[in-house]
Length: 196
Image 1: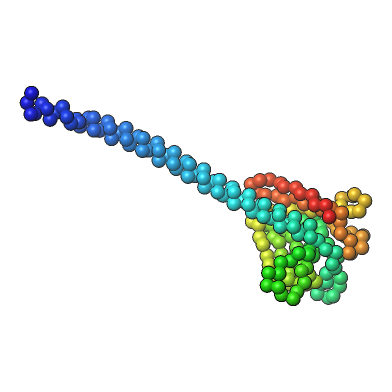
Image 2: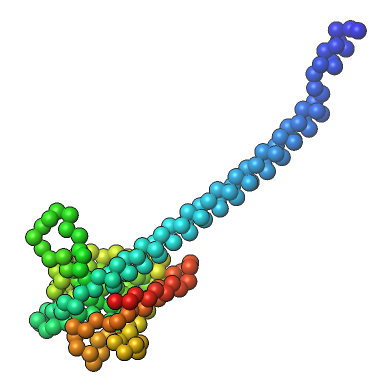
């Protein structure tokens, strides 16, 4: 056997190298396409999880506000008394107990808050004083852009649902229960019933 014949058998031909490169290229393109789809799916799941967390945060905050309602009356800029809870199908204004005071400042634990749709998004506004004029600028505003609608109903003491509160009832009266329905762009409607 000559040296030329031995070298010829130990290497690859140009056709074999081209076929190997073609197979490697096809496998690489399949893997890249799969990773791209997986990355896109993971991004979609992250966005969905963030929107769901926003929905949960809004529902939990509204739930906490309603569970800590107090029958404290408010005042407007002319000094007229406002009901303990003033609500329509689209908005709610009231006062709640349990306001955090981490610095131990000498202040009330009561806080006035409002839930309403503003500029096609759900917004919670809060005032530092429980009897602040609702026309004044709130000290805190939390916006939930993924939530585009809210609807309230109020149950009176005899079990009838009302669209407005307090209606003809005394202004310090709180409903027996409040039902709210939040509309999310992605998740549809979420309904909660809070018994007071």
